[in-house]
Image (tube, rainbow, N blue to C red):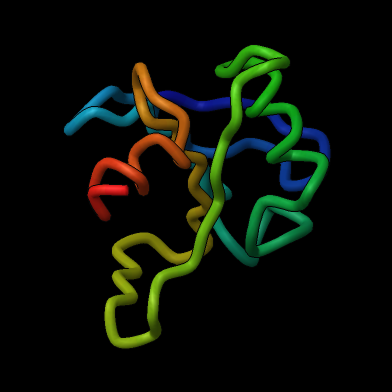
Amino acid sequence: MAEIELPECGTCKLIWECTNGYEYVAVSPQDPGSQNKYLYPMWNDMCVLKDIFFGDEEVKYKYSSKKFRYVNSVEGRMHLWRPIGYEIDELIKRVMNL
C-alpha cells in the first residue's frame, strides 16, 4: 500500500496489483471525514489514477456488482480494473462461447 495526493480528495491510500488476469487499482481517502474534503474519490481523482496507471487507448472499468455481492472492506474505496491481454468483449464472448 502506498499514498498518493489527488486533486479532490487529498492524500489517499493506494493499491496497485496484477492478480487473476486483471490489473487492479484501488484508492481511498486516508482518513475519511476528517482531513479530506470528500469521503470517496471524485471523478477528477479517478481520471488522474487512470492517466497514471493505464495508457490512453486502454479500456478501464469501474463497475458495480449486484447488491447482495457487495464487499466493503474499506469505506470510501474506489476501483479500476483492466483484463490483462484481452478486451472485455473478448472475455464475454469466450465465457459465453460465442
